[in-house]
Image 1 (cartoon, rainbow, N blue to C red):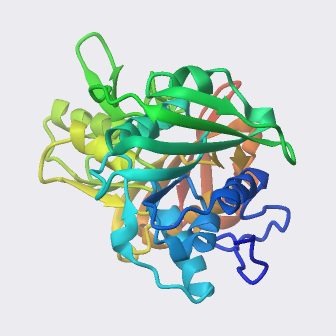
Image 2: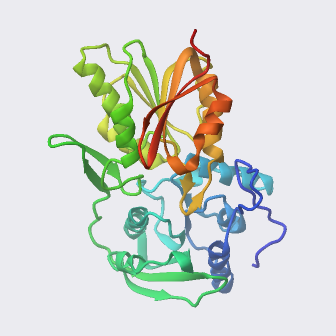
Image 3: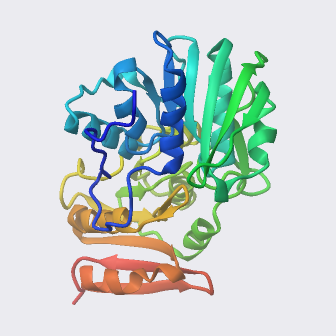
Length: 371
Protein backbone atom coordinates (compact mmCIF):
# COMPACT_ATOMS: atom_id res chain seq x y z
CA UNK A 1 0.00 0.00 0.00
CA UNK A 2 1.27 3.43 -0.91
CA UNK A 3 0.18 6.83 0.31
CA UNK A 4 -3.00 7.35 -1.67
CA UNK A 5 -3.54 10.61 -3.47
CA UNK A 6 -7.22 9.68 -3.64
CA UNK A 7 -7.54 10.13 0.13
CA UNK A 8 -8.09 13.75 1.02
CA UNK A 9 -7.53 14.99 4.56
CA UNK A 10 -8.55 18.45 5.67
CA UNK A 11 -8.52 20.33 8.91
CA UNK A 12 -11.77 20.23 10.82
CA UNK A 13 -13.22 22.57 11.79
CA UNK A 14 -12.19 24.17 8.52
CA UNK A 15 -9.57 26.87 8.91
CA UNK A 16 -9.26 30.21 7.15
CA UNK A 17 -5.49 29.91 7.53
CA UNK A 18 -4.33 28.13 4.37
CA UNK A 19 -0.81 27.71 5.75
CA UNK A 20 -2.04 25.18 8.34
CA UNK A 21 -1.91 21.60 7.06
CA UNK A 22 -3.82 18.60 8.37
CA UNK A 23 -0.71 16.37 8.59
CA UNK A 24 3.07 16.63 8.46
CA UNK A 25 6.18 14.61 7.61
CA UNK A 26 5.94 12.75 10.94
CA UNK A 27 2.56 11.32 9.84
CA UNK A 28 3.96 10.37 6.45
CA UNK A 29 6.95 8.63 8.04
CA UNK A 30 4.66 6.43 10.13
CA UNK A 31 2.67 5.44 7.08
CA UNK A 32 5.77 4.72 5.01
CA UNK A 33 7.04 2.45 7.78
CA UNK A 34 3.82 0.44 7.58
CA UNK A 35 4.07 0.30 3.79
CA UNK A 36 7.35 -1.58 4.14
CA UNK A 37 6.13 -4.23 6.60
CA UNK A 38 2.38 -4.35 5.85
CA UNK A 39 1.63 -7.34 8.07
CA UNK A 40 -1.94 -8.55 7.67
CA UNK A 41 -4.26 -9.60 10.48
CA UNK A 42 -2.58 -7.32 13.01
CA UNK A 43 -4.29 -5.48 15.81
CA UNK A 44 -3.37 -1.85 15.17
CA UNK A 45 -3.80 1.19 17.41
CA UNK A 46 -3.28 4.82 16.42
CA UNK A 47 -2.42 7.56 18.94
CA UNK A 48 -2.46 11.33 18.53
CA UNK A 49 -3.85 11.27 14.98
CA UNK A 50 -5.11 14.87 15.05
CA UNK A 51 -7.21 14.97 11.87
CA UNK A 52 -7.45 11.31 10.90
CA UNK A 53 -4.61 11.07 8.38
CA UNK A 54 -3.57 7.65 9.69
CA UNK A 55 -7.10 6.47 10.45
CA UNK A 56 -8.01 7.03 6.79
CA UNK A 57 -4.90 5.55 5.18
CA UNK A 58 -4.98 2.49 7.46
CA UNK A 59 -8.75 2.11 7.40
CA UNK A 60 -8.80 -1.29 5.69
CA UNK A 61 -6.78 -2.73 8.59
CA UNK A 62 -9.58 -1.87 11.01
CA UNK A 63 -7.47 0.08 13.52
CA UNK A 64 -8.63 1.56 16.78
CA UNK A 65 -7.92 5.22 17.53
CA UNK A 66 -6.99 6.44 20.99
CA UNK A 67 -7.91 10.11 21.36
CA UNK A 68 -8.08 12.78 24.03
CA UNK A 69 -9.98 15.56 22.24
CA UNK A 70 -13.60 15.77 21.14
CA UNK A 71 -12.47 17.98 18.24
CA UNK A 72 -10.10 15.18 17.24
CA UNK A 73 -12.94 12.66 17.22
CA UNK A 74 -15.04 15.00 15.09
CA UNK A 75 -12.15 15.54 12.65
CA UNK A 76 -11.55 11.81 12.27
CA UNK A 77 -15.26 11.25 11.65
CA UNK A 78 -15.41 14.13 9.16
CA UNK A 79 -12.47 12.88 7.11
CA UNK A 80 -13.47 9.21 7.17
CA UNK A 81 -16.92 10.08 5.85
CA UNK A 82 -15.46 12.57 3.36
CA UNK A 83 -13.41 9.71 1.91
CA UNK A 84 -16.34 7.28 1.79
CA UNK A 85 -15.43 5.29 4.91
CA UNK A 86 -17.73 4.44 7.80
CA UNK A 87 -17.08 6.00 11.18
CA UNK A 88 -17.44 3.46 13.98
CA UNK A 89 -17.64 5.03 17.44
CA UNK A 90 -16.74 1.64 18.92
CA UNK A 91 -13.26 2.06 17.44
CA UNK A 92 -12.66 5.19 19.52
CA UNK A 93 -10.96 4.81 22.89
CA UNK A 94 -9.44 7.12 25.50
CA UNK A 95 -5.99 6.98 27.16
CA UNK A 96 -7.34 5.61 30.45
CA UNK A 97 -9.62 2.98 28.87
CA UNK A 98 -9.22 -0.76 28.84
CA UNK A 99 -8.47 -1.78 25.26
CA UNK A 100 -10.34 -4.70 23.67
CA UNK A 101 -7.35 -6.75 22.45
CA UNK A 102 -3.59 -6.97 22.92
CA UNK A 103 -1.88 -4.69 20.42
CA UNK A 104 0.48 -5.87 17.70
CA UNK A 105 1.43 -2.52 16.17
CA UNK A 106 1.00 0.97 17.54
CA UNK A 107 1.47 4.21 15.59
CA UNK A 108 2.06 7.16 17.88
CA UNK A 109 2.86 10.78 17.08
CA UNK A 110 4.70 11.96 20.17
CA UNK A 111 2.76 14.85 21.75
CA UNK A 112 4.31 18.01 23.15
CA UNK A 113 3.25 16.96 26.66
CA UNK A 114 5.75 14.42 27.99
CA UNK A 115 3.23 13.44 30.66
CA UNK A 116 0.76 12.55 27.93
CA UNK A 117 3.48 10.49 26.22
CA UNK A 118 3.94 8.63 29.52
CA UNK A 119 0.21 8.03 29.75
CA UNK A 120 0.09 6.64 26.22
CA UNK A 121 3.00 4.27 26.83
CA UNK A 122 1.53 3.18 30.15
CA UNK A 123 -1.70 2.16 28.45
CA UNK A 124 0.11 0.49 25.55
CA UNK A 125 2.33 -1.55 27.88
CA UNK A 126 -0.72 -2.83 29.75
CA UNK A 127 -2.33 -4.05 26.52
CA UNK A 128 0.66 -5.42 24.65
CA UNK A 129 2.01 -8.86 23.86
CA UNK A 130 5.64 -9.92 23.79
CA UNK A 131 5.94 -8.92 20.12
CA UNK A 132 4.20 -5.56 20.28
CA UNK A 133 6.00 -2.88 18.27
CA UNK A 134 5.40 0.82 18.88
CA UNK A 135 6.41 3.21 16.11
CA UNK A 136 6.67 6.75 17.44
CA UNK A 137 7.20 9.74 15.15
CA UNK A 138 8.28 13.31 15.78
CA UNK A 139 9.71 16.29 13.98
CA UNK A 140 13.47 16.45 14.53
CA UNK A 141 13.33 20.03 15.82
CA UNK A 142 11.12 18.86 18.70
CA UNK A 143 13.32 15.97 19.80
CA UNK A 144 14.01 15.57 23.50
CA UNK A 145 16.24 13.02 25.22
CA UNK A 146 13.26 12.49 27.51
CA UNK A 147 11.58 10.54 24.70
CA UNK A 148 14.14 7.77 25.14
CA UNK A 149 14.29 7.98 28.94
CA UNK A 150 10.51 7.74 29.26
CA UNK A 151 10.38 4.84 26.79
CA UNK A 152 12.89 2.85 28.84
CA UNK A 153 10.31 2.60 31.64
CA UNK A 154 7.97 0.67 29.37
CA UNK A 155 10.06 -1.04 26.67
CA UNK A 156 13.46 -2.74 26.84
CA UNK A 157 14.41 -2.04 23.22
CA UNK A 158 14.44 1.27 21.38
CA UNK A 159 15.89 2.32 18.05
CA UNK A 160 15.95 5.68 16.33
CA UNK A 161 15.64 6.03 12.58
CA UNK A 162 17.41 8.31 10.18
CA UNK A 163 15.74 11.65 9.51
CA UNK A 164 13.47 12.04 6.49
CA UNK A 165 11.92 15.40 5.63
CA UNK A 166 13.03 16.58 9.07
CA UNK A 167 11.06 13.79 10.79
CA UNK A 168 12.30 10.74 12.65
CA UNK A 169 11.00 7.55 14.21
CA UNK A 170 11.56 6.01 17.61
CA UNK A 171 10.79 2.29 17.40
CA UNK A 172 10.03 0.49 20.66
CA UNK A 173 9.99 -3.28 21.17
CA UNK A 174 9.87 -5.86 23.98
CA UNK A 175 7.39 -4.29 26.39
CA UNK A 176 8.16 -4.48 30.08
CA UNK A 177 5.09 -6.08 31.60
CA UNK A 178 5.42 -4.39 34.94
CA UNK A 179 2.77 -3.00 37.26
CA UNK A 180 0.95 0.01 35.80
CA UNK A 181 2.62 3.30 36.65
CA UNK A 182 0.77 6.10 38.41
CA UNK A 183 -1.14 8.23 35.90
CA UNK A 184 -2.38 11.00 38.21
CA UNK A 185 -0.62 14.18 39.28
CA UNK A 186 -1.46 15.92 42.55
CA UNK A 187 -1.40 19.73 42.50
CA UNK A 188 -1.28 21.82 45.65
CA UNK A 189 -3.69 24.77 45.87
CA UNK A 190 -2.67 25.88 49.36
CA UNK A 191 -1.32 24.30 52.54
CA UNK A 192 -4.42 22.17 53.01
CA UNK A 193 -6.01 21.67 49.60
CA UNK A 194 -5.02 19.64 46.56
CA UNK A 195 -6.42 18.88 43.14
CA UNK A 196 -5.87 15.75 41.07
CA UNK A 197 -5.47 15.44 37.34
CA UNK A 198 -4.54 12.74 34.88
CA UNK A 199 -1.22 12.90 33.11
CA UNK A 200 -1.42 15.03 29.99
CA UNK A 201 -3.85 17.65 31.30
CA UNK A 202 -2.72 21.25 30.87
CA UNK A 203 -0.38 22.62 33.57
CA UNK A 204 0.72 19.35 35.11
CA UNK A 205 2.54 20.47 38.25
CA UNK A 206 0.95 23.72 39.44
CA UNK A 207 -2.11 25.90 38.94
CA UNK A 208 -1.48 27.71 35.66
CA UNK A 209 -0.23 31.27 36.30
CA UNK A 210 -2.83 32.84 34.02
CA UNK A 211 -5.58 31.03 35.91
CA UNK A 212 -4.11 32.18 39.23
CA UNK A 213 -4.16 35.77 37.96
CA UNK A 214 -7.76 35.37 36.81
CA UNK A 215 -8.91 34.11 40.21
CA UNK A 216 -7.13 36.99 41.93
CA UNK A 217 -9.00 39.55 39.83
CA UNK A 218 -12.55 38.28 39.40
CA UNK A 219 -15.38 39.35 41.68
CA UNK A 220 -18.32 36.96 41.87
CA UNK A 221 -21.91 38.20 42.06
CA UNK A 222 -24.43 36.44 44.28
CA UNK A 223 -27.12 36.69 41.59
CA UNK A 224 -25.08 34.63 39.11
CA UNK A 225 -26.69 31.19 39.36
CA UNK A 226 -25.87 29.66 35.96
CA UNK A 227 -22.10 29.65 35.47
CA UNK A 228 -19.98 28.09 32.74
CA UNK A 229 -16.31 27.21 33.21
CA UNK A 230 -15.20 27.05 29.57
CA UNK A 231 -11.99 25.13 28.91
CA UNK A 232 -12.29 23.88 32.46
CA UNK A 233 -9.14 21.75 32.77
CA UNK A 234 -8.92 20.03 36.14
CA UNK A 235 -11.79 22.15 37.49
CA UNK A 236 -9.80 24.64 39.54
CA UNK A 237 -11.93 27.64 38.47
CA UNK A 238 -15.17 25.82 39.23
CA UNK A 239 -13.66 24.71 42.55
CA UNK A 240 -12.82 28.33 43.42
CA UNK A 241 -16.30 29.56 42.52
CA UNK A 242 -18.05 26.85 44.53
CA UNK A 243 -15.83 27.46 47.55
CA UNK A 244 -16.40 31.24 47.39
CA UNK A 245 -20.20 30.83 47.33
CA UNK A 246 -20.01 28.37 50.22
CA UNK A 247 -17.77 30.66 52.29
CA UNK A 248 -20.22 33.53 51.81
CA UNK A 249 -23.15 31.32 52.81
CA UNK A 250 -24.77 31.64 49.37
CA UNK A 251 -26.86 29.06 47.57
CA UNK A 252 -24.62 26.93 45.36
CA UNK A 253 -24.87 27.91 41.67
CA UNK A 254 -25.12 25.46 38.81
CA UNK A 255 -21.61 25.21 37.43
CA UNK A 256 -21.08 23.72 33.99
CA UNK A 257 -17.64 22.49 33.00
CA UNK A 258 -16.82 22.13 29.31
CA UNK A 259 -13.49 21.01 27.89
CA UNK A 260 -12.26 19.60 24.59
CA UNK A 261 -10.02 17.21 26.55
CA UNK A 262 -11.45 13.94 27.83
CA UNK A 263 -8.65 13.70 30.39
CA UNK A 264 -9.46 17.20 31.65
CA UNK A 265 -13.14 16.40 32.16
CA UNK A 266 -12.34 13.11 33.87
CA UNK A 267 -9.84 14.96 36.09
CA UNK A 268 -12.42 17.55 37.11
CA UNK A 269 -14.74 14.71 38.12
CA UNK A 270 -12.07 13.60 40.59
CA UNK A 271 -12.13 17.04 42.24
CA UNK A 272 -15.75 18.18 42.15
CA UNK A 273 -18.65 16.33 43.75
CA UNK A 274 -22.26 17.42 43.93
CA UNK A 275 -25.38 17.72 41.80
CA UNK A 276 -24.66 21.34 40.96
CA UNK A 277 -21.62 20.38 38.86
CA UNK A 278 -22.38 19.42 35.25
CA UNK A 279 -19.63 18.00 33.03
CA UNK A 280 -19.45 18.14 29.24
CA UNK A 281 -16.74 16.66 27.02
CA UNK A 282 -17.04 18.95 24.01
CA UNK A 283 -15.14 21.48 21.92
CA UNK A 284 -17.97 24.02 21.75
CA UNK A 285 -21.01 25.22 23.71
CA UNK A 286 -23.64 24.92 20.97
CA UNK A 287 -25.76 22.61 23.15
CA UNK A 288 -26.46 25.37 25.67
CA UNK A 289 -29.67 27.34 25.18
CA UNK A 290 -29.32 30.90 23.95
CA UNK A 291 -29.35 33.53 26.72
CA UNK A 292 -29.18 30.86 29.45
CA UNK A 293 -25.95 31.72 31.28
CA UNK A 294 -25.17 34.44 33.82
CA UNK A 295 -21.40 34.09 33.71
CA UNK A 296 -18.92 32.45 31.38
CA UNK A 297 -15.40 32.37 32.76
CA UNK A 298 -12.44 31.07 30.80
CA UNK A 299 -8.72 30.75 30.38
CA UNK A 300 -9.10 29.76 26.73
CA UNK A 301 -6.65 27.57 24.83
CA UNK A 302 -4.69 29.13 22.00
CA UNK A 303 -2.48 26.26 20.92
CA UNK A 304 -2.63 22.56 20.17
CA UNK A 305 0.69 20.79 20.70
CA UNK A 306 3.25 22.99 18.92
CA UNK A 307 0.72 24.95 16.86
CA UNK A 308 -0.58 28.38 17.90
CA UNK A 309 -4.07 29.00 16.55
CA UNK A 310 -6.67 31.40 17.96
CA UNK A 311 -9.46 30.61 15.49
CA UNK A 312 -11.12 28.14 17.83
CA UNK A 313 -10.88 30.62 20.70
CA UNK A 314 -12.54 33.38 18.67
CA UNK A 315 -15.35 30.98 17.70
CA UNK A 316 -15.92 30.28 21.40
CA UNK A 317 -16.17 34.03 22.05
CA UNK A 318 -18.85 34.30 19.35
CA UNK A 319 -20.77 31.40 20.89
CA UNK A 320 -20.42 32.89 24.37
CA UNK A 321 -22.11 36.11 23.34
CA UNK A 322 -25.12 34.13 22.13
CA UNK A 323 -25.37 31.97 25.25
CA UNK A 324 -25.16 34.80 27.79
CA UNK A 325 -28.27 36.33 29.29
CA UNK A 326 -28.96 39.98 28.56
CA UNK A 327 -27.08 41.11 31.67
CA UNK A 328 -24.60 38.22 31.56
CA UNK A 329 -20.84 38.62 31.32
CA UNK A 330 -17.85 36.85 29.84
CA UNK A 331 -14.63 36.97 31.87
CA UNK A 332 -11.40 36.02 30.08
CA UNK A 333 -7.76 35.82 31.05
CA UNK A 334 -5.23 35.90 28.21
CA UNK A 335 -1.58 36.41 27.48
CA UNK A 336 -1.00 40.05 26.57
CA UNK A 337 0.75 39.21 23.31
CA UNK A 338 -2.40 37.61 21.87
CA UNK A 339 -4.03 41.06 21.62
CA UNK A 340 -7.61 39.90 22.19
CA UNK A 341 -8.66 43.39 23.20
CA UNK A 342 -9.42 44.74 19.71
CA UNK A 343 -11.37 41.61 18.75
CA UNK A 344 -13.46 41.65 21.94
CA UNK A 345 -14.24 45.35 21.61
CA UNK A 346 -15.68 44.72 18.15
CA UNK A 347 -17.74 41.75 19.36
CA UNK A 348 -19.02 43.10 22.68
CA UNK A 349 -20.50 46.60 23.13
CA UNK A 350 -18.78 46.83 26.50
CA UNK A 351 -15.34 45.37 27.24
CA UNK A 352 -13.53 46.36 30.44
CA UNK A 353 -10.06 45.48 31.67
CA UNK A 354 -10.34 44.32 35.29
CA UNK A 355 -6.81 43.04 35.79
CA UNK A 356 -3.49 43.52 34.05
CA UNK A 357 0.20 42.89 34.61
CA UNK A 358 3.28 42.51 32.41
CA UNK A 359 2.17 39.09 31.15
CA UNK A 360 -1.60 38.67 31.49
CA UNK A 361 -4.78 40.68 31.10
CA UNK A 362 -8.29 39.93 32.39
CA UNK A 363 -11.25 41.18 30.34
CA UNK A 364 -14.89 41.49 31.41
CA UNK A 365 -17.30 41.63 28.46
CA UNK A 366 -21.01 42.46 28.34
CA UNK A 367 -23.28 41.90 25.35
CA UNK A 368 -25.26 45.10 26.05
CA UNK A 369 -24.03 48.42 27.34
CA UNK A 370 -25.32 49.28 30.77
CA UNK A 371 -27.34 52.49 31.02
